[in-house]
Length: 158
Length: 124
Image 1: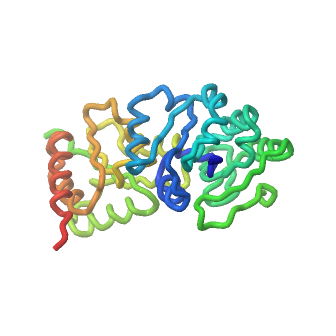
Image 2: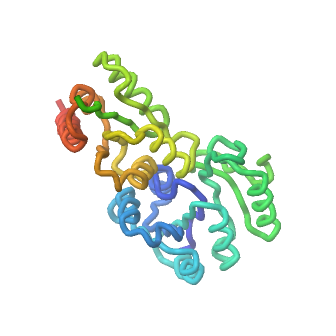
């Protein structure tokens, strides 16, 4: 079954992911691609505590993930791919464009240099430019924090 | 007399501010609790808010959920500190217990608050 969600969310595994998306999509596994978390056992345990019984969390660094994307995309279970930043998702897209053909910007929050584009989406001008470049390469980019909200096309984000 | 414990409430949205306000109204004790919201900030910014709210003195940090962005931020920053204890599942009962036991060591104040908060969960 193809991965049902490919999401950039700087809070990683949290309520919106587990409850907001996890329930309606009936997610059975989440792949969290983050080089830092992939080497931190206690932080992995913290994220495992955030998911219900029966939902597997797979932790991976970017390099390992790039080689396993196709396998996750054909896993018979319902799954989601999650990264904490745009660059990581872009690396995965470049590694396997067929698997990561569209992405969801679900939560990128304020930090100095970023501007509010949507209540849950803050991007610097450079980040917006890079996303537009990725879309020109063929990646479909939409913003949507929860499934009950309407997706916003990247072209509508200023 | 040693410095009284600081209490910090970390929660989603406006929950922390509302709980601190309610605890102050009920107890009459003001300034003992500091609210921190995760609204509008990424992981790094939330961790910074937590660090600034806790400061360098002994403290008990109350978190809304036993998992999620608030707990992650708190533990990533405060796990190495022996003088800080974290209690999850914050409710008013535990905050009210805490504000009257701030002269205890953090470990004892946290244990009391957690027990009181747990007792307050009932199906009457």
